[in-house]
Length: 127
Length: 388
Image 1 (spheres, rainbow over the protein chains, first blue to last red):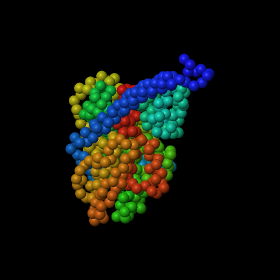
Image 2 (cartoon, rainbow over the protein chains, first blue to last red; image 1 turned 90 degrees about the vertical axis):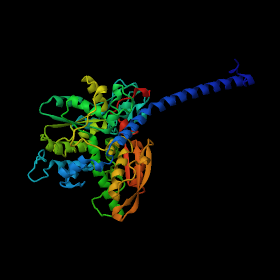
Image 3 (cartoon, rainbow over the protein chains, first blue to last red; image 1 turned 60 degrees about the vertical axis):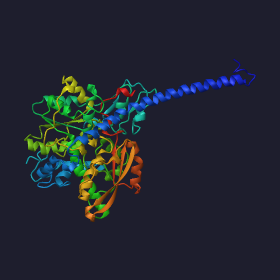
Image 4 (tube, each protein chain N blue to C red; image 1 turned 120 degrees about the horizontal axis):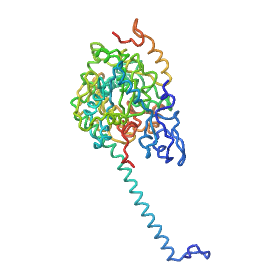
């Protein structure tokens, strides 16, 4: 091997030999990278399968719109907005809504106060 | 105060293999440590989402467990223990029992929970429907207020962001406090469930709410943090007492010797257990948006929706957008183009938030879910070892 000889320059034959080695190693690296890529691409196929399962479940349901759920109508009529189906009443604001960030401490104070005449925290909904 | 609130849910174990894979899946850069160094989670930035946990090739990331509290409550004769399960649990719970990925085990899940001894087996899907009623109405009020159909000074600004995902809420609180007024004030379905279980259900069942103990089965580790947040006491008690993940439920079923695969299907208990297909799709990215559109369309237009499915909001691209023309009854049938966007992966939310804060967002409603693909790929779901 005169590849590293001090006298400099490489022969035509050595140039082809070097290029050949580089080419083959590039091809091999490429093939392995592709195999690796395919392995990771196949690995999240389970996400698609779980997603498909959710949509299939939806399709199988007789009712597919939230406002048509009879138990939803019932909870409004019996409890949240007596006699009617009306979201965002005072009661649903208290039970079903919240606040974020810096508004939380005041919300906690509010929730700890008795909110119905004569009611104590913890016995709020005894009636 | 619960240690979860101060230290978080997710922990890297001392036996970390220092491979550095977790830092590439963390949405907020909360994990410190370079290749070859043991990694640590900085709780100030961590959303508790558990993506690092399900993606650790060596299984060296763990979570805080509430299993002992749940088992103690089950044995306590003074406790009346009820359970709710999130939509995404039912399409993944079969996997640890060798069933093919994507098998629907909704009926078996209800049967197994009954065998484990829960007094009432309800379903988070019921409160997902309730979320649509509250959050959908809130959106309608904001839209009406903005187009001048019905003035409402309490209506929040547009666009409205969804508020079901506890990792997204924590992301917004930490990184963009100014965006918080844009978030829907509706609680997540899990917390709505706790609040109605200890009031409405307790009342109807004749159970003392002080004795009621609410357990959630969630595909999510951030839900453990959510249930500990001090503001969720609107029933007069801690609304949701404990959260276990899909993985923890699978282990519990195995440990109890229940032959899960051969269980007969059972329904959830009535009262707060019925649901619609709109609630089911909460478990997938774009699902809350689609469910909200199905209801909002009918309420805004006063007409029956011609086609139930909004395929344009589906898919797995991290950011998707769609426009839906809705004839507005309150404006004499004048159509309004409602622009929506869906984000899956909180790290993709920042540009949309910046647009909103700069006043140039074209959207009315934006859904953000932290985990890629939605809750079906949450941090509490069965770990897929075939991924490596």
